[in-house]
Amino acid sequence: MSAQVIAARDGDEGAFGALFRAVQPGLLRYLGVLVGIEAEDVASETWLQIARDLRSFQGDFDGFRGWVATIGRNRALDLLRSRRRRPVSSVPVEDLLGDRPAADDTEGTVLSGLGTTAALALIAELPRDQAEAVLLRVVMDLDAQTAARVLGKRPGAVRMASHRGLRKLAKRLEEALRPAGTPTQSDRTTSPEKDSAPGVTPTKAPTLKGMR
Image 1 (cartoon, rainbow, N blue to C red):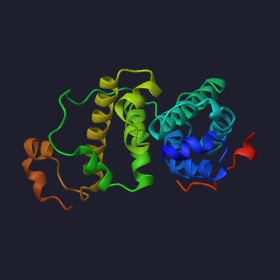
Image 2 (cartoon, one colour):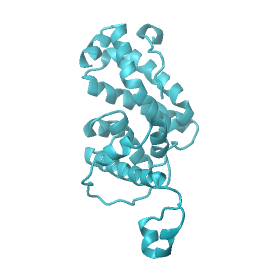
Image 3 (cartoon, rainbow, N blue to C red):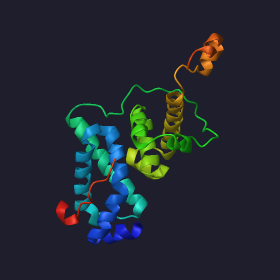
Image 4 (cartoon, helix red, strand yellow):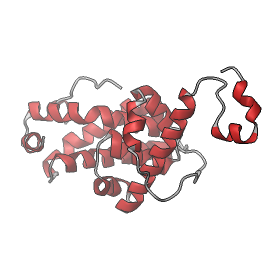
């Protein structure tokens, strides 16, 4: 897609449309966690700025996605500040997980067990730093360094927040899929007698001309 970035920067409408279709779904999901139902409006403002400033952009497709995420995040935070409310994903920070990465493929486990709507609903319940890290790393497919630039943090901090968020999502998914009445491990430990209890569609690609 890096060739499309260059072509779009030179005014190619088709290349710009291809970039939009490639990036818009992930952008909408990311913004949806930040601003909820206003994600479409914020995304539109984001693409207006992209169309206006694209000629000055320097970088490949990975850099372009990071640039889009940065613009979208700034627009979302501007909206939240103007209305003096917190991001949708802001909840009291919980530090329930250890610092060492899990040996299993947590990301694959979580994503394979969730549909898009369910995944975003669970991600929105995470602490904001974890929610944004998961969205940027997994949903928008940014590497740790690019995601760190978007968030203004160190890559290691973004990796850890993403890891913790995915671990927490995996735990919540396990709880959600457990049949009703099935005891947890702690239930079995404290009350053995309980063992017998019953059991986002991308819109039509805009054009450069329509945005200027």
